[in-house]
Amino acid sequence: MTITDNAVYVDGRRVIEPKTLDETFEVMRDHHGVAWIDLSHPDKTELQAVADELGLHHLAVEDALTGHQRAKLERYGETLFLVLRPAHYLDDVEKVKFGEVHIFMGQDFVVSVNHSDFPEIAAVRKRLEERPQLLAEGPHTIVYGILDLVVDEYAPVLAGLENDIDEIEDQLFNGDRAVSKRIYDLLREVISFQRATRPLVDMLARIVDGLEGESELEIKRHYRDVADHATRITDRTDSFRSLLENALTVHSTLIAERQNDEMTRMTETSLAQGEQVKKISSWAAVLFAPTLVAAIYGMNFANMPELQWPLGYPFALALMLGSGVALYFAFKKRGWL
Picture 1 (cartoon, helix red, strand yellow):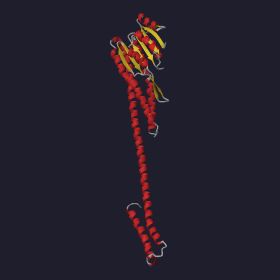
Picture 2 (tube, one colour):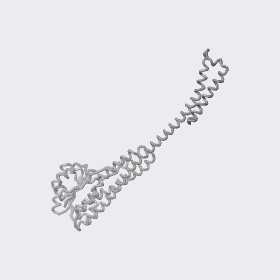
Picture 3 (cartoon, one colour):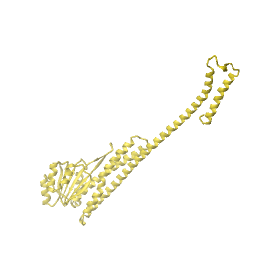
Picture 4 (cartoon, helix red, strand yellow):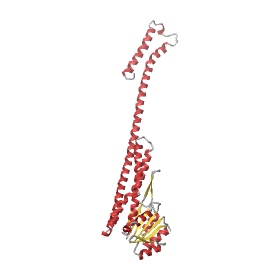
């Protein structure tokens, strides 16, 4: 049997530790006490035996067997069914590891079903047994104790997320190309953490609203204290999500600015190269005209009229010089030289 602990409490004190479930139910009814049965990874047969004896709703039992449920609170007649998502933060891989705890609470019993290795329900039991006056308030005290532990263990998760977000802010402005993936992965973890914590505020409010009478005033105070902690956690988680979403936006903006700067530098370089090409082309044209004239008159043909002309040589020099000067001033006027 996957029973990690099984006891009956009368007036907040542990009166007996039954060896079997049948004995638990018998003692609970004979002594008008409260039974607290803690199960770890139960199979269908084991959980069904508890469900049949305590009259648990088959839909709640099915959820408890299937697992992978969202955090929620449901009421089946006089029985409350809660699903909690405890969490640990694995800083080395920047991931939030989630557990799952199901709680059935009736007028004289609590059945806690743990589908993970955390939180330590035994720690809750020990702490409550040290306060019999509080435990004497009834099953709600046990539910409060488990909720309080789950919410308290969210604090290290927040600290781990906050530390990684601080690192991302430094990394963001250092031009690290891998930061975008880190932001996205961390944002995904924050959203998952939101899904685990956000329903708690409403769940606790519904539990408090369901309590009536002066006799339950003390347990109401304890529930409200847990609700305050849950509210602070959800508020900080919301701020983490906003920070990471803004970080993604800033990262995209920085990438766009760097791309614009790169394009500007490339454009400036291209313009500078164009100016150089203009100058080279202009000087090539200036030198080309005299070279053309010299090439024509340098051909060794016998019948060239200008070869016998007395002014042929000065004319050729003047033509070469004139064409070069004319081209120079033409390019200079256009700004190419």
